[in-house]
Length: 244
Image (cartoon, rainbow, N blue to C red):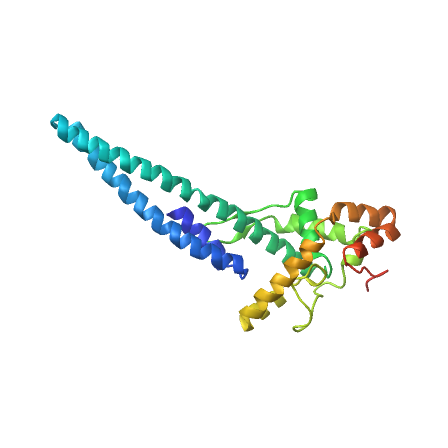
């Protein structure tokens, strides 16, 4: 029960529609866990009966009932393992949201999700979730790595001035080239239906560019900027010669 409550705390702190779906599923799993606990209590009571003095017929009936319950509990436990999967998915998303927020504050204005992926995979940036649903990670180390990234020749075009990003409600803040968590939250609060549509549009755009590898792009931008821009444009990402 405690684990489910911790995962629910994570989901409630997120504005992503997937978190809403997770909350619904977690409520169902919470009810399942309650039923499993009740069945375990019955099994324990049946064990006490089996330890007592029963005639053969009664012993057989009690044992059969216990075995049925144990099989049901096994199935329930298998379903309850889904809690761990949800926790991992939400934890990854929550950690990535924090990294994206710090990138945006540092001036990242393009390809933020891919920068997040690069920091996680190439620099090992990770985190955990506390019991209150808060992300715990080394923000100072993250800030240092972002600062170094900003001055890498291949990544400079992805950054503008610190604190930059979309203003108002222009564009689609779920799109790679315009990713902005603050704007996502504002739109989701004003118009959840539109927010979901924008997210769907962004997901489709992302599918269209699944072959793009940020590590490869970064290396190309360092070693051969012209080739790097050619690769980015192939996937619909327009990188300026220089961002002021």
